[in-house]
Image 1 (cartoon, rainbow, N blue to C red):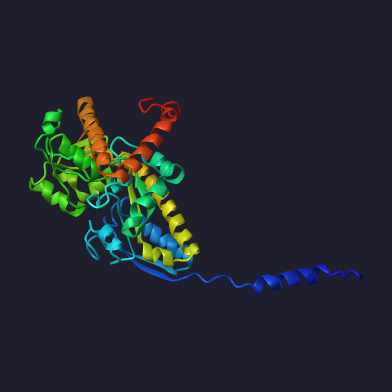
Image 2 (spheres, rainbow, N blue to C red):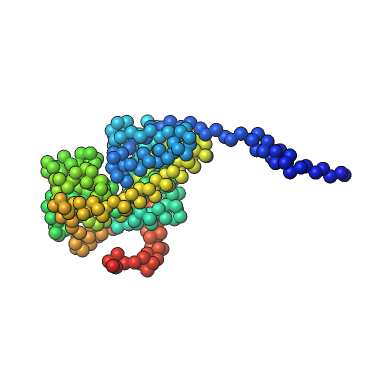
Length: 353
């Protein structure tokens, strides 16, 4: 059989023609309204989802548009879970745990008192089986949850008076969310759950004796330092604070794999950006508070011991009541224990200078 030699230029042209003849798949159009539990002005806590939305527009060439709605504009600030679960909206952005009355295990994904800090929580989500448990937890509620933000430890909170002993907590009117709220109840405080926008007035009028909410930068934006001068740390109740994009299962399954990957990947980037921003800004904010007459305080060892004891009791009680809660809590504890020696030996002690 006679061989045929194709000149190099003709071969290159043929290859070019073949490649050009294969049309690229068109990017699908997505238009969702995204109600948020936090104002978009709140640093690292509320401005992460708007950043994710803008990045998705760029990545998709403008065809994936997740329009952000401020708290209360589309659904109530604490009603994101319910709105997505019932199909009122395609998706929403919130701290996981506000729906604890219906999904007990959600509190664990939002924050675990004396638990994992943000980097280790992310490690558990992505490499410790956490994401599979997350999806399992919310599937019965027709929600596909996506890890989409995490910030540094919160402050323990603002108090109108100094807290010296565990007895000072008894009868204290305090705002707290999730498992932290249950622990404050366990040590004798009267706990109220209010959204961030209502806390300044409640603290100012004495409806609350104290409140926790978020990072120093966020607390500054909400003005708590104007009505309470005792700022307590560390944030034992929320060593990490984790936000999620809740997506209706019906809306999610309609998306092409390409679009799903774009949303999940951009949310992963949002976790990085939120944590980086949170870490970058808190030192200067503490200095600002001190200049303005705020007293920075750390809870004493007896107080931390009292909180820790109550935390263990609350986690045991919640685990006994809800099998999914126990499953998630056990997974987290096992992952933390497996890495404990690495954290104890591999990292410099925090008091090292």
